[in-house]
Length: 228
Image 1 (tube, one colour):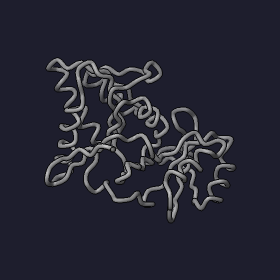
Image 2 (cartoon, rainbow, N blue to C red):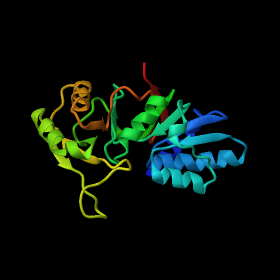
Image 3 (cartoon, helix red, strand yellow):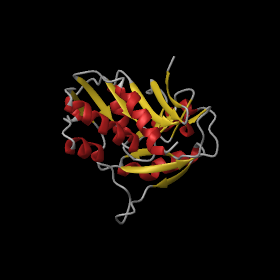
Image 4 (cartoon, rainbow, N blue to C red):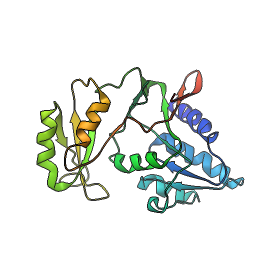
């Protein structure tokens, strides 16, 4: 099935998890863009929702389509949040290193009653692999210390650089990103805890407890898998 059709399947199913007057968290990516299209049409028919998002591109798209966006710091609870990921496994461990906004995405997830990932079947695995690096957001002064600490636990750290400017990638909050490759990982929860315990680390791109549901699309249709 065409990837766009898979995205539509995910987005249509996501609409079934949205109720009137809900506060909705939205991440970034093409699945979310597709969901925004359906939200926009539903709002024209009378649906009332408000959006919080850590993504500048998602915020701009919502505003352009007439969807109300709230600042995250004004919200203490979210009814349901939707996002994508690089990979997620049967234990609901997810890797989300690509966009570099994982710290704020994790905040959205923590505030949400339901945190749902929209994916196609290829991103769903039996066990999380090491094909994607683990991204860390770190304060600038901790850079060399964090790199040294990561090497001690078997990681290969690379400071993320921008393709559009000279120097390192800077997050919206003025921090740096380190992408870490691991050849093998025996326990993702332990790894996440070890990385979070390093002084200077603000957050990791590993989601080991936040995900509550998966909406998975494939050529046969779409299914919802809930965390037990």
